[in-house]
Image (tube, rainbow, N blue to C red; front, side, top):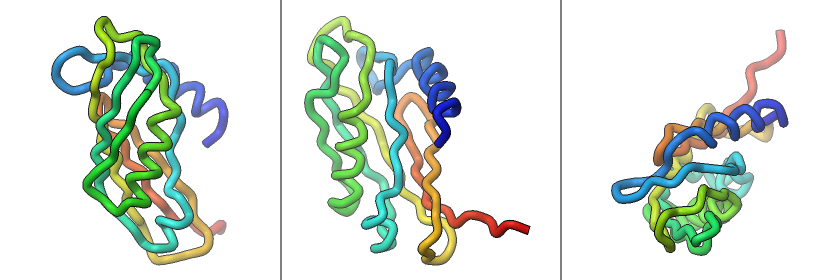
Length: 134
């Protein structure tokens, strides 16, 4: 993803609420997740529910993914640990987000990852094969 697109996405997300129930916190910084090559090669798909704990400074101090193959859970946990949030009014704050990994098209050595954010609590990461140049 280009730096400009990532910067625009960060600005949009900074103005969006995030969380489930209770207190919502806003995203200050997000890292765009990718469909890892190991998961793609193994043709793994699934939904990972990540429970994360945010400290008083808005940093993720704990993340636990469940519901999908371990490789996808680990990818999701590593990604969410790079995000930062506004300071919660009471800490620690527990939030939940779902990462959904989807493969599109037949197996290929050539692919790209695409992430779609449906805030407040859903990220879809797809692995797509680029369209041939004509």
